[in-house]
Length: 428
Image (tube, rainbow, N blue to C red; front, side):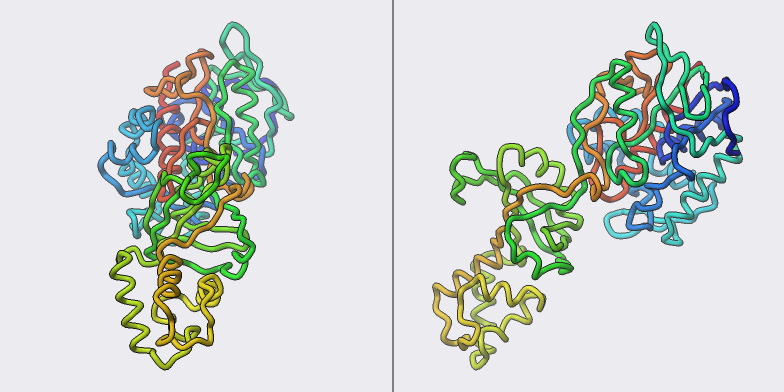
């Protein structure tokens, strides 16, 4: 039920933030018989949830090995283990089944609702909130959090004050600010004494220096290998000074300003960290199944088969048609030249373009395009077994506000479900 606050309300738990982590926290606490209020400043819950998985909502990942699952979160994986053991990906599937949502597993163990509709996932969560009698306060903006002696005494909202025994801040990060993720929780947590690890966009596209990238906009690549390189000496940017720092195989996408797609999104956090030291390079191998020698033989065979054709008409079996004009241009081989006249040096240039296609990354796209936020509240200040603040006695934190994020594939929503469920199991 949604209503205005006319006087101080007394709850066992007040959750600030009606996203995935906030909703799961409220459901978890209310299912234990707690009197719970859920505050959301938007006119509806789950605004950002509706955008996840391009509107399909990648609920979780079906990886059953929890330790292997946790490793996907990188250096902060150890922090998340108690939450993941408390509420596993299998628990997530069971929970949504109880919500009336059938799921399916796709490539990479990605789990989606059978309907392919994020709105159905949100509908199931709201149904569960109502079933557990959670007090839902929409269009309610928290103005300030009042604390004394390391304890929150009340929160001020634009519709009145709320008094509660315990509080959870689950306001997310800074990604997709149009959905309400404007960093409010960071400010409150810092004011209460928590340290903030600088937030930056993650799972986001990159912008490159090369202007010809617009020619490739919309081109999707499959089964390619992309490596990330950073100059070992930022003052000397000769290609030989670049060292390889990451490598991924899979799918990517060219945009009008750079690149996106699964490979790039999963690299973007590292790219964002490296760019403060100078430009990065992405090197695309369009034919990773073939080494240089094997690919050279393939080119020779194709050129023998099409020996009467002009060079511009000889690459259709090797590359997507959209990229062929650019490859021809960058190879500096006369497009009208017959393939049986192409020299060894020309073929070598073409070979390197196919195996080492370079792009210079100048920046990542901003929070407006980022799927999640890297950085957030310092994890050493939070009890990983309860999600309770070590600074404020009756404060818990859950979800994207924490300094932990994962790759694409359902990992970030699972982090929200797991930390939210654990935070909701507070002890008064």
